[in-house]
Length: 328
Image (cartoon, rainbow, N blue to C red; front, side, top):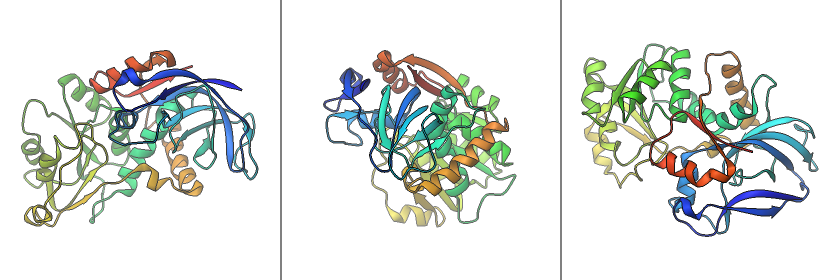
């Protein structure tokens, strides 16, 4: 079987993204073959393309998608041919019409959730889940607590704004424009700070009556790291889960001592979804909160698969909000 797919033969800019024809065979033990209806676009895709996260070449990009299962391999019990399904998964390879992949990361998609929503929500929604539910400060998070979430108008951010509100948390979102700040507020952020126009750490202190917050969730990295540290109260946690502005430089542990016995972690989604059981449990919570209406998945941009280069340019230029999908 033939499938159109997006491949790179070397690390570089969006111009390296090429549409190619690939052969797709039958699934082996523990695998499925899935025909995609929509594919999610994520910042991690640009890291893999550029070489920030290096991979062996050639590389087929893409970490999440939704579609219909065509065939299942030996030992796969939770899926069958004809099932609607969605996933966020290693290895990359979702930018295509059809693929064979490990079944353990693939979940049945409830009938009430569209393919576009499914493709847009898995990686970003599961990321919001492991941050707000599992990457917690030593003192925990209770209703009424403030937290800081950078890039609050992005795909993960807009989901986190809504989910934090549903959990009774007061999310202080940051973004690079006033319009993006308003978007975060519209999705449930308690406060929004434009970090391109002032000292966000000072504003966080002001909002919290000088105390600071228990936790900062930071996908921006290099540009926000120092300010993020300054937002934290004693025993606070900084969770750096992305590198939008570049990786954080080496840190002196003495800084964490001088700022109040702070904690820093660098979590990844794929540690949290290493087993089928863990993936399914997290996906069940995500599906439930989306089906309840408490969290809506904003698909703000759609690009045909053939326009993948432009999609990457727009994502890196911060021209996108919410979630973006490649359509087939």
